[in-house]
Each structure stands twice: as C-alpha cells, then as structure tokens.
Length: 113
Length: 112
Image 1 (cartoon, each protein chain N blue to C red):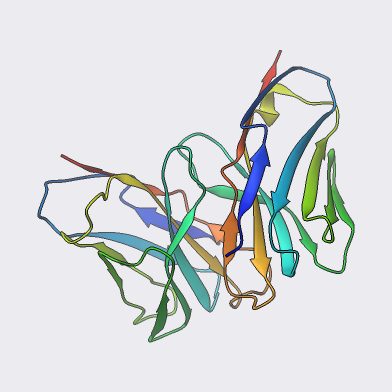
Image 2 (cartoon, each protein chain N blue to C red):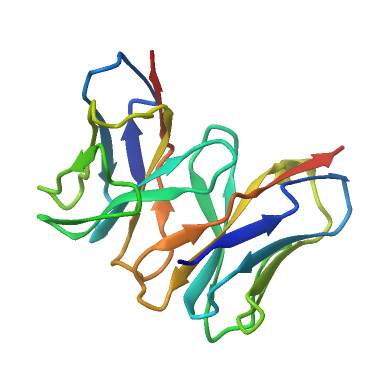
C-alpha cells in the first residue's frame, strides 16, 4: 500500500529531553512537510523539504530540527529548546512543492511530562 | 501574511440536511484552495482542490466553490450522513506555490 507512516502514534517526553518523530513515505514524492496542530488553532508549518538534502524553515521552526538524507524519510527532532512541545504533529508529502495536494500521515501526539 | 478563517467553528445538523461550510482568506492572490477532512486523532484527508482559475469542484455529495476576488470559499455537503461527522479544514496556497495556510476548521456533527 502506498502512503505515509508516522511513528510512534503516542510519545511521552520528560522536560529537557530531545525526541525524534519518524515520517516515511513510499509515494515517491519529492516534497515533505512537518506541521504542528494545537487545539483551536490551524496547522502551522514547522519545516519543509523540496528535495533530498535540502530543507527550509517554516513559520515555527525554533526548537525543532530535521534531516532529509533519503527521499522517503523526513524525521523531526523536537529539542529541549522547544518551550511548549506538547501537540499533535503531522507529516505530509506532495509530488513536488506546490504541485497537487498534500498527503498526510496519521500523526504523532507528543506529550511532555 | 495570509490568514484563513472558518465559520462556524462547530455545527450540528440532523441527518439528511444539506449544509454549507464557509472559509475566508485575506489575500486573494492564491495558487489553489483545498478542503480537507480530519477525524478525531487522525491525519488529514484531501477532499477537493480548486485551482485559482477554477470556480468550483465536485466530488460525490461534496461541492466546493471559490470566489477569489472576495476571498471566499464554501463547501456544500448534500444529504448529510452521520459518517460525515468530522472536522473540515480549509487551506490556501499562495501564488509562490510554497506552503499551505490552514484555517482552524469547522467541527461537524450529523445527528442520526
């Protein structure tokens, strides 16, 4: 089956710890995205990548880091510098940036204890 | 910066009713507009995509319209069903074809 997978579904972190959220796609898409969703707010863009080994900051990149070493993978690291990391994180991909619709993964809910 | 607003925030209707969800955006220079569905605790599913040159798109019981000049889009759902219960999100892409700007969504409940 083609699609986007995110793992884990639920993640708990102690304050001061870095955690990495996984995102994998087998759609052969060039572009990938990370969004954060908070209650009562729209999705906000954290980082995006148009192609392997390239990525750009979105609107709320502070406290986050990404890598794009393989076309199918775009992991997101939530660092201890992120002051309010508890949120629902969504990964998406599209054939290329701005082309066609974005396909979303099932999301990871991160809770900081 | 583009701002996207969706009204109402929540809507409850009896099964079988036709309904309209509204989306407005502040910058009319858009590349496309998309409507998504999100079930609780899940990712987003694309419903309809309207290019800036188009006025509407239809898929089954769903019809989305776009009026760029007034900065508005509507999603029309005909003969609503309990399975339509979800949050509906509107998102616009600017002419730079860079990234999507999302509204906060309308949470729809269809009562059997």
